[in-house]
Amino acid sequence: MKILVTGAAGFIGSHVAQRLLERGDEVVALDNFAPNYSRARKEANLHEYAHQPRCEFVDADICDADYIRALFTVQKFDRVVHLAAMGNVRYSIEHAPEYVDVNIRGTVNLLEAARLSGTRYFVFASTSSVYGKADVVPFVETAPVARPLAPYPATKIADEVLAHAYHVAFDMKCTGLRFFNVYGPRGRPDMMPYEFTRKIAAGETIRVFDEGRPQRDWTYIDDIVSGVLAALDAGFDYELINLGRGQPIELLRFIDIIERLVGRKAIIQHAPLPPTEPAITYANVEKAARLLNYHPQTSIEDGLARFYEWYQRGND
Image (cartoon, rainbow, N blue to C red):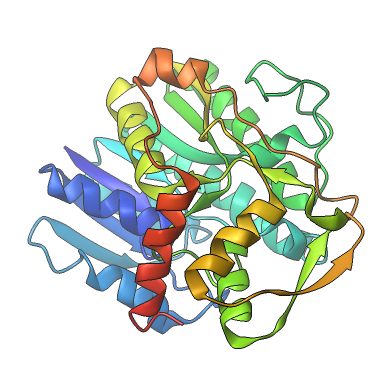
């Protein structure tokens, strides 16, 4: 199959593109090197796989509707894995217009180009943040998601709704994957595993919310990628599916694991939990297990150890 992967120089996108190539697919890898972190780091991600003969890299912006439409016309993709986005909940609070432009308008551009070109399989990244402060844990896909806590999850809810509209109106097969706290090698510098590892190793202060009580459902990148590929192959009519570990841990335990890996105690500055942060993220993964045969394998201890091995190889 010929598959378009957007955000292919990023964290999740680079892993997905690499796995697709390893199993024999043809990949068009698209990224625009947005300056949310260094281009050099993204080029290093690309270097892991983009030299392969079945891979074509395209330096392009999903917000350029004309270019995206022409790309679909020329390439004739079988399926799309849409992972390009403005991420980071906290950054979105002060930058909502950017998030609307990239996460909503960019997604519509891709959906429209797919529709016009006859591409009917569209898998896209959503987020566990759509659940906000959900009343029921673990979070299940049928829970209402009308009250996001920040612009970032609001744009992802919009993507889910738009994909459903394209499914109904144009018979496109769309699957939204709600990722839970993904971590691992190639992780972004603004994400907690990377930030805390760097600061603890450097003897810098880390800010810890609510005495370290918040819980997060950390999910290792290899498990996430397995779920993405399974969803891509399944070709559901329309589904929203949680991809998480299903085993949330407290922030203090997360910090303790990093301290042991780094060999240094964290310097902690305590702070109250912001209103944009839920007390817990916790994936109900029964639907993913049933529909995708999704069974995450990597514990937080093993996953952070692998992340730290990557971090030590000059990625700090």
